[in-house]
Amino acid sequence: MNYQHHFSLTRSPFGPVTTSDAFYSATPQRESLARIDYLVRSASRSAVLLSHRGCGASTLMRRIAATSGFSGIAVQPVLTSGGVNSRRAALARLAIAIGIDPFVDQLTQRIEESIRAFGRSQVKTLWLIDRCDAATAEAAATMASSSSSLVIVMGSTLQDAASLQDALDFCPLRIDLDAFHLDDTFGYVRFAIAAAGARSELFEDSAIVRLHELGEGRIAMIAAMAELSLLAAANHGRKIIHAELVETVQNELVRAA
Image (cartoon, rainbow, N blue to C red; front, side, top):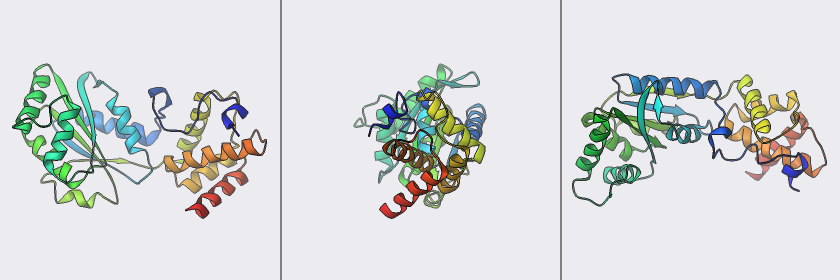
């Protein structure tokens, strides 16, 4: 059944965030953004954004990549990801992101020249690295030491962060993206369904509490369970989601895993 029609919604409330108006900035996101704002304004050149899996680091980085400045400081944000096996491959991804042919000779120098050109125009380059790996961290360390107008944010889960330590020969600023608190989950669920066109509350308070508890405050799990709860409710002709339905959905997810 089309649950969006059942609940008179204009879009999926808990699907991937593809527009700025669908992004919910909870307390952890606001705190991380404040730290990145400090990073851009300070003499520091790099930071590691640490989070548990499912806490929304990738979504946050995509949101930052859509901005053009922090506290009056103009930035050129570029977003790449890890998953490479050499510094050259990491730099090739950076080159593509800033519009440079990745196959040119002296690639590092060409990238540095481009970053310096923006710097002369009082624009800092903000290199965002989602799911940073050791090879990309090594490339970032090299670039951070040679480009004064480059700021780097390396995203990593707490589980994978140890693999970056050997690659970094400096101590970057640490930014922690924490899981949601209960009030963040309440705000997120209500924001998401309102942004999707809901005319009334769809989740009882007890259902949101169970979403938070079962999802351990991780937005990815909360969103997945909320989405499936809407689908299950529509299939049973219900207009309100109760805590018992959330628990049933979670049990189905556990069995499917």
